Image 1 (tube, rainbow, N blue to C red):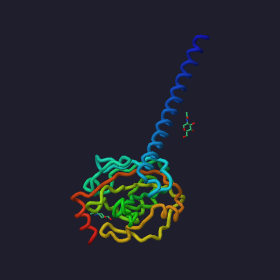
Image 2: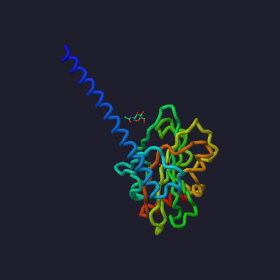
Image 3: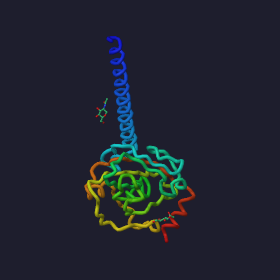
Image 4: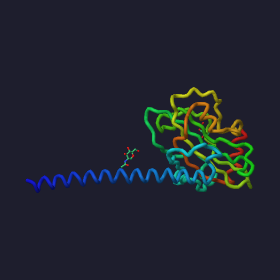
Length: 218
Ligand SMILES: *[C@@H]1O[C@H](CO)[C@@H](O)[C@H](O)[C@H]1NC(C)=O
Ligand SMILES: *[C@@H]1O[C@H](CO)[C@@H](O)[C@H](O)[C@H]1NC(C)=O
């Protein structure tokens, strides 16, 4: 009897230990990840050029097989269509705001139009981007020739409530009203708090850019 109890105890004990170990290592990888997000965003001056603080979570963004990964380089051709996959921790009953913005317009050396925003969607229920309210249609990267790498920053905010935006809607057929935008000002205006999730890639001119300029001059 004693022996059996010992065995049961040992078994329960090991299972508990297994859970605790799994939880600890999961916590550790989470905090390592946030530490990496913070380090890379600060090294690349996303904080403070675009954001005051590092987003809490890493935002997953994919263009087909091409992944946005903390400053990796993608081409305008690779990002000409909206991302095919976006993921972040969410609550189904909350609304979120998603933005993609370029602080390096027309160049990182002389960012006089900082920021030129490429995409702005509010009132996204959970992570159902398609059900959100598009304020600015998606426009891919279009860095002018000879202006080097631009940073393209994705940021998601968790909204305190459903928004009633006053901004006018911008289509993907014109570049008007895209420049001199500040996502931090937009976030402050609607009380969105600190950035919830973020990521960024970098891109420079390629032969797709002239096609995009044509699209924007319609
Ligand atoms: C893991 O993190 C959660 C909250 O983030 C906390 O409640 C839990 O105690 C942590 N577990 C360990 C083993 O540190
Ligand atoms: C422009 O946006 C519309 C939706 O508003 C979309 O149907 C269309 O494919 C987009 N065009 C380009 C060239 O991205």
